Structures are given as structure tokens and as C-alpha cells.
Image 1 (cartoon, rainbow, N blue to C red):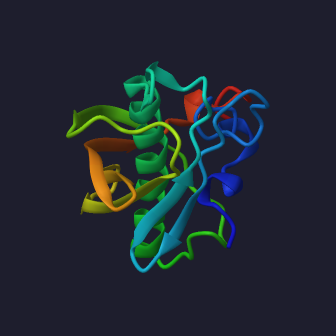
Image 2: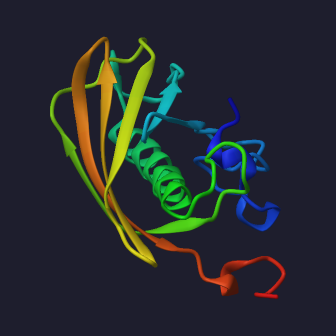
Length: 157
């Protein structure tokens, strides 16, 4: 299945967290499965905060980029498009709230699951969780808004 981020327009594909055109980025990949966004991420040893634990800033970045793709996927479904097949509309973050429920161990793969809880014409609210070995380590709420055309590299045309 094609990740939602892989179908962002080129002007919007440079994000450090999820942009396919950013060679130094994290390359978060969100797939649409049964009405929710699902992503997997393997933290590297340098994603450390304290020995044995994942850096919280990385977890916030992953939650942010994953939620933005989920907002796009939910909007696509609401308008009759197919996430992972049709071009993905680009959203940006208006608000990011992250709760760290427990220390996130460094080593195991992270599982991110998210759902839109509110879908508006311009704004989507997404709730998400990050799991390690079935334990919820992070909970987040993201308010996503459609990216204005003025953010395009081509100057909005």
C-alpha cells in the first residue's frame, strides 16, 4: 500500500518528518487502514534522551506528521477520494498537544495509530497514540488545517 505522504504534491514533500524529498528526514509513512492512520517507525540509537529511552521531541515530531497525514486521509474519505491512491491534500499543524504517558523504550519499533475526531471544511482534529509492544506510551491531539496555497514553492500559483 502506498503511504499518504508519498502522494503529497512535490511543493509540499520536503518536511523533515515525512517529506519524501528530504533526504535527511525521518520519512514517516502513514497508511490508511479501516478508517485510521497507521504508521511504524524504528527509532535509531541516536534518537536517545537517556540511555534506553526515546527522545520526546522525536515522539512529538512523529505524532505531528502522522496526524497531519491522517487528517488528509479522513478528508479524502469524506469527499469520496481514496487515501493511498489519489493525490493527498496537504495540511499543516495549527495545534499539537502531546502527553507522555510513560517512558518510551529505545529499541523496539513504534506503532502509531490515529483517527480523525472532527472533520470540517478547513480544519480536522486528530487523536493518536504511540505504542511499544502493545503499551500506550504517548497520546496526542492535533488540530490540522489545510495548507494555504501561499506555502507552495511556486508562490501560490
